[in-house]
Structures are given as C-alpha cells and as structure tokens.
Length: 263
Image (cartoon, rainbow, N blue to C red; front, side, top):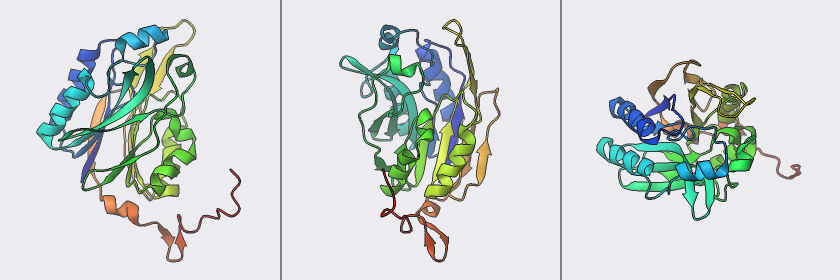
C-alpha cells in the first residue's frame, strides 16, 4: 500500500483555511493512508482554555472530520489527523481516523506536553488498533513518543503502522521514532508541522518539521526538511511489520523477560 505524511504550516485560528489547504494536498496524493499533523486545523499555541474551547469541535460531527471523511470517501483512503476536540465541558488534544465509511476511531493524547497541561484534559482513551483491510493502524500524538509503553502497547495489540500526528519543537523525536519502529518492528508515520507561533510573550515556538516514514527495520523511507510544507507518499508492505524476528532465534515479542520487569 502507499502511505503518506503531510507536513503543513497552519495559521492559528483560521480553521477553514487550514482544513481546505490540507484537503487540496490530500486530493493530489496517490496514497491509501495519509497522516496529518497534530492540531492541524487550529494551530497549536492557545492562550487559554476558553480560547481553545471556542476553536475546538466535536470529533464526530465537526467540520474537520466531515471534510476529511468526504475526501477519504472520494479517494477510498484512510486519514489520521490531529484536532482540538470538545466533548461536553472537556477538551482533548485528539486524533481521528476516518475512512471511506466515516469516522473509525478517536484517540485522545495521553501525555500532555508543557502548557498543554493548562489547556487540555488528559486523554482517557486506550491505545487501540484499527483494521483497514490492508493494514492494522494505531495512533499516538506527538509527546507520546517519549513513552515507549505507548508504541509497545500498540505493537502488542497487533499494529502494523503507528500514525503519529505531531507539533514537534524538541529535536529528539525523529531519531527516537526510528528506535520505536525497530524495537517494535512496526512502520511509523510522523506528520509534523513547520513555522513559528509566538502568541504568548516569552514562549515563542519554532516547529522542527522533519516529518518521516520509518520501516520496521529502522530504515528512513522519507524525511522532510525543517522549513517547508511538503507531502510525500511511499510504498510499504504492512505484512513486514508482522515479522518480529531479529535473528532466526530472536523474536522481539516472545523474548521479553517479563519475569524480570519491574513496572
């Protein structure tokens, strides 16, 4: 199958413009799985929780999910995208998985980064795996990369591909996600953004780009630069992620010494 990452440069608060810009890129891609960045529709640096709630939307009936579903149906593809989700009086940094038949899954970010703790409610969804037919897909969001349990849980549940919408500002993640792919023998698709946001005095954020696609063996199949919006699709074989042997006698799942682990 062909899998793609879309690296964007959203404008804060200009939701429809950001969504329609991403839709135009998706329509030109030859890909069956497409990953967009974290908070792709709103931008990242909210000044307050009330401001975020005004820009957030319902994951099931919101504009972003609706438009992504329309293009997924048209292209017969699957799309993972990060949104600000409003659910009742709570607000989550979430990602949605949509396909030709509509919304398939919602993941709410488990590990909130920096000022996100003031803005969002910690995620309350488990790390689930969704079968698209050709591949089994799991979702993480940005700072989840630092916690190996997140990727390992998805791998243990049978994920072939980890879709990883991000708004990265720290430099470590691109290399770390190569390790996550190797230690779990899964593909990882990290879709990051570029540009800067300086809406809070003294807290200017510069996003590093470097969106990437990594194979189960740690091969870098694609990596974007750090300054420009870009999209890239590569051909992958999801079944390669089901081969968990490093050597003929070493299986990364079966060889775990759980009798020695202290959690």
